[in-house]
Amino acid sequence: MLVIHVVGARPNFMKFAPVWRALSARPRVRQFVVHTGQHYDANMSDVFFQQLEIDAPDVNLQVGSGSHAEQTSEIIRRFEPVLLQHKPDLVLVYGDVNSTVAAALVCAKLLIPVGHVEAGLRSFDRTMPEEINRLLTDQLADLLFTPSADGNRNLAREGVCETKVHLVGNVMIDTLVRMLAAARNSIPADLPPRYVLVTLHRPANVDDLAWLGQMLRVLGDVGESAPVLFPVHPRTRKRLAEAGIQPAGSRVRILDPLPYISFLGLQTRAAVVITDSGGIQEETTYLRVPCLTVRENTERPITVEIGTNHLVGRDPERVRAAAIAILAGEAKQGDIPPLWDGHAAERIGTVIAGSAGG
Ligand code: UD1
Image 1 (cartoon, protein in one colour):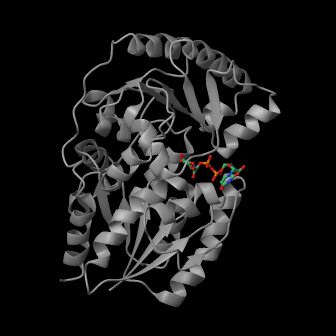
Image 2 (spheres, protein in one colour):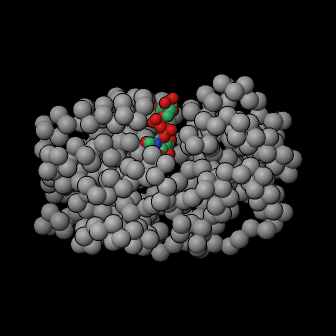
């Protein structure tokens, strides 16, 4: 059988890598990788393929940036001929980015089965573009691979037939488990013994320049207790420049986006991680590192219920109080969710091989 994987943005690559590897071990499966080009800077894309030891994509659609409508429609337009040419038996899409929903829609119209890896997550906040992408992709998918049981419950509520849904665990954790030793070895010798790690990139946060300025001031204050390391997404860097915001004091170090292994290495030893990312909520839970999520909701409630994640909202003062409390030793203990064990992609491989009759 021929499986086409569609990836496009940074958080796709670590989810796709273990599935590609698991399917590579199955002699009856042929694979073809399409990169939409949603992310194109070398440090947002190429470096992940190198570090995760996956072959370069077979095709790059080079859609680049644009409004949601422009980006999504370009992916749809450029992906259709690839499907018509290769006629795959299954297309796999990952996560909740624009590339995910665009590819799923093309498949549905051409009656090509589509599998969604990381199905069923819901923030119940339709102002988030990712929530729209999740809802639509799950309605279109023929195979839905969920990372946790809340995903199955959400899909059942939306009327998705349960025979399509497979609780397999978290593929992002597969990659973490595989790369953990390399990540620990990558930690620079001159890293401070105690530090705070920060990522902020969501438009709802960083496009609000007054909020961004306030957050930087709070990070400067937190930096009095422990140095703050802040690798910035290209969007955030632009906004900081537009607003003329300087990091508050030398205790906040602004860095370029980091490769997967370096960033994972920094997470393993952080005293606390402050983020608005989805995947980092999961990685910190697995690593049992305290995480403050600077959002009003999360599509990954299990990281709050049983992991080390705290949902602090968009209130910089709450971020300050929570970070200082954790630095003073008040961190909650967390557990690792079921099936976040490094073998989710193998379970996906078993389901796919079964669906192809062997
Ligand atoms: C996308 C995902 C988001 C994910 C994030 C991870 C959607 C709707 N959003 O958001 O869920 O958390 O990726 O990074 O798909 N840019 C560059 N170089 C690049 C890529 C982007 O400079 O290689 C800049 C461009 O100015 C671009 C902006 O970043 O306009 C945003 O990129 P885009 O792909 O639209 O969304 P992200 O914010 O990265």
